[in-house]
Amino acid sequence: MNFAIIRALIRIRLLRVFRDKTNLIWLFVMPMVFSFIMGQLMGNWDSSGQSNKPKFMVYDLDGGPAVDRLLAPMINNEFFLLVRADSTVTTERARHLVEKGSITAALFIPGDFSLAAEDGRNASLELFYNSDRLSSQTVRTKLDESLLKVNTLTAAYTLVATPDSAGHIPPGHSEALDEAVFQEGLSSPRVALNASTLGRVEQEEFPLNRAAQHVGPSYILFFMMMFLMMSSKDLVTERQDRTLARLMVSRATNVDLVLGFFLGGLILGLFQAGVLLVLNMLPPFSIDYGDSLAGLILVVLLFGGFCSAASVLLGSIARSGPQADGFGMTFTMMLAALGGLWWPLEIVPGFMQKLGLSLPSGKAISVFHDMIGRGYGVEELSGLLIGLALWFVGTMLLAVWRFRQLVAV
Image: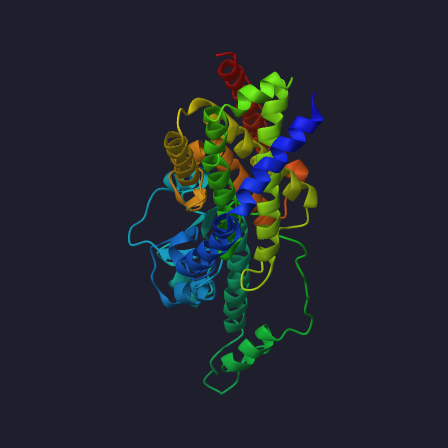
């Protein structure tokens, strides 16, 4: 292996890029401009997007005031959207919808619920929920809190009795219930528990709550991929200028030439990604990439390696500079659109999510989502990182094979 030739090829590629000041705009300025504009267009993804919230379906056969009091604390919850269905379904159908993930929970309220609450009689509700989902757990917690209030109020009313003909009230009873006092006692109990949730919350739903958390990493990946794949025409230029032939005469091997072009692109991509990652940590983006520095390094390194290997492969296939540009732009746009760099994979149909996650762009942006939104480390990210590594190795092997054929001609 001739390290002098490898270093020379790396130096030539980097000089070619940085001598043209226009390249600096596409390397650093345009990714940040696109991130800012698209972040503003997409807005935030927290409680403002009700249509994206998991649905908590309530099948109400009563419609009375007791039901209104029961459900009132669960309206406008940040983790789920309460929907009072205008028709009922079977319990088997509701169970199927919850298990399938179409809804997060289903509550059945019988037709005599309000009357039973007024008379102090027992009433039964039926709830189906998925204990593995954050939104479903929240439904159960909020429903328990509301039922506690209803049951306590109902029990308090059993202590209310009207005076008899002599004006006497039964012992232990009151003539009336002061609901204001009751509400104050319920909202300000004598014993209170203060609990704090530490760390990021693992959830099945879309883990990000700000558009910047998606568009920042996605445009880092997009512009890294575009710049490296479009630079495949540099290899075509070297072929047309007979530079490769002269290097082969100087005892450079196929491995030397491939490594020179590959490492030049990889160093360029890593430098670009490093600068953009730091810029995205600053206001107004203020992105927290999580606690796994190893995961962040691996995803950038593997995706940069794939992009650089792909540029060598495309440069070995293309017969002219314009053709290399066409190949680079086509593959960049295809991988960006299908892989979830333009919009989150979580909002597309299931079969498109599977397709996107099979691509290197989909795996890379999913790693960022899991690090930022769920606080995953290398162990939890291992499946995506291994898949990304396989794409890198496979593309590199194809690039070496095609390059050997090219030089042998």
